[in-house]
Length: 88
Image 1 (cartoon, rainbow, N blue to C red):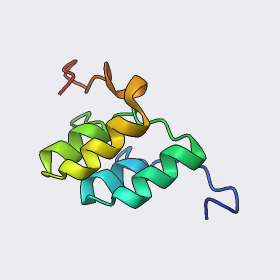
Image 2 (cartoon, helix red, strand yellow):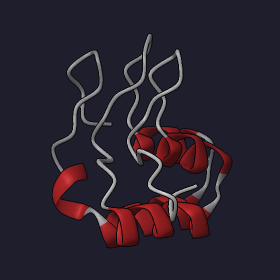
Image 3 (cartoon, one colour):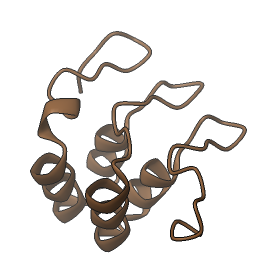
Image 4 (cartoon, rainbow, N blue to C red):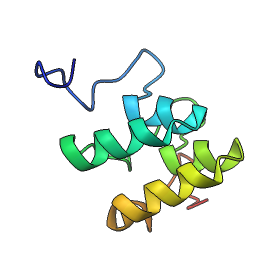
C-alpha cells in the first residue's frame, strides 16, 4: 500500500496512525519501514487518551520498538506530549 502511495499518516476513527498501531503491537520492522522510508509523523496522538506511538510501545512493554522509535525519530519524540500534556 505504501509503495502505491497510501497516506502514511492516515488515521483510523480513534486517531491511530499506522506507526501507532505497529508500535502498540511491537512490530519493529513496520515501525522502521514507515519512519525511514515514508517519513511518518510519530508525534501524533490518538484519541481519547492522547497517547503517542512511543507511549503505546512503552506501555505494552515493547522495548525493542521503543528503541526503534527513538533511533529513527528522536527529534519528533523527545518533546511529544499526550493529551494530558505529559511526555511519557
